[in-house]
Amino acid sequence: MADIEEIKGTLHSWYIQNKRHLPWRETTDPYFIWLSEVILQQTRIDQGLSYFNRFIDAYPNVKLLADASEDDVLKLWQGLGYYSRARNLHHAAKTIAHEFEGIFPSDYKCIIKLKGVGEYTAAAITSISFNLPYAVVDGNVYRFISRLFGIDIPIDSTNGKKLFKELASEMLDKKDPGLHNQAMMEFGALQCTPQKPNCQECVFNETCMALKENKIDKLPVKQGKIKIKHRYFNYIILTGKNHTYLQKRTKNDIWRNLFEFPVVETEQKTEIDQVLKEIDRFTEVTNNTELEVSTWQKQVLSHQHIHYRFIQLKQTEEKPGTENLIRVDKKDIFKFAVPKPVEQKLTQLGWV
DNA sequence: AACTCGTGGGT
DNA sequence: TACCCAAGAGT
Image (cartoon, rainbow, N blue to C red; front, side):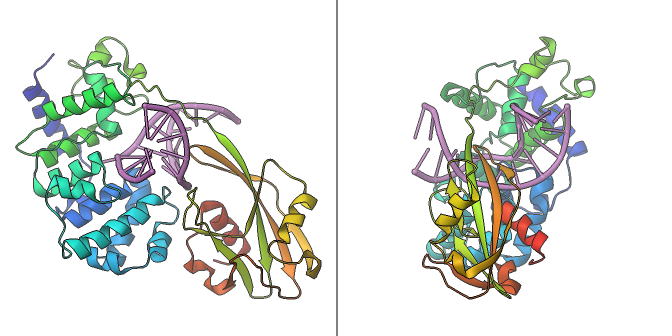
């Protein structure tokens, strides 16, 4: 095996030649680095890039983000998923504005205390923005290191996390930790890819243990397997000529603090009549005509499959419900952050 | 420490 | 199709 210094040099050169040009690589401002790192958590660059640009456009500095409303921040985050990131981002912005006078903290211990900033993000910000020697360990780094050294300890085990963090720290180039960390991740993302990496043209194809032992497709090892839960949402669209009703999801559940049509959740695909009984919670069915029911569709989440359909009831006589329904003019619906199934329905209806 | 939180792309 | 995975964090 080549020594660590040689590996670092090879990686460094590879990065200089192959790195992608991205907006957050044009700056070391910790606000922009932080924003990009939170957006990119569990998210591909292709998916997050436009969100980054919209956020720095809407909130050019941390104070402006802190002064925004959570509803507005969530609206800008709509479609990106893992909405706790947006809520925590906003919360942390307020912390920085109020406790640090709007100046982004520069040491690891302060940064990692911010909501939504864990070990990975704290290491990324401190190394890239402040040139501090903290090694990042993300999915790319796990994959690259496990293959390079032929390590089959599960990356999602306690021992595995500890070992990979130690190895990443050993490999870290303390003279340029920011460049090194980004090189590790970029290499994992572009060269040492999850499926079918091009090992023939890899700069480490003579040092990589996994390639030598023909174990590329077996590394890294993951032990955890998630169990999928099925849920059934009957969305009730109550409409008048120019309005409808929305609710805010305030429980500790998926899509927390996003808006949606009032929903009747059932154990399975229930008969319409059964659901209609529940609708009396919202309004009186007898005053509604023209019932329109969509087919079932499915939204796949990490741990859940949400089966959903829309039951549209056109009201001839307005009867506001009893359960915190928000009466919304159709022309104002675009202001609300909504989950993907609702967004698609709104688009189909031509309301957004 | 296991579980939960979205969405989209690739095979 | 069904599965994997993606610049992880909070509880």
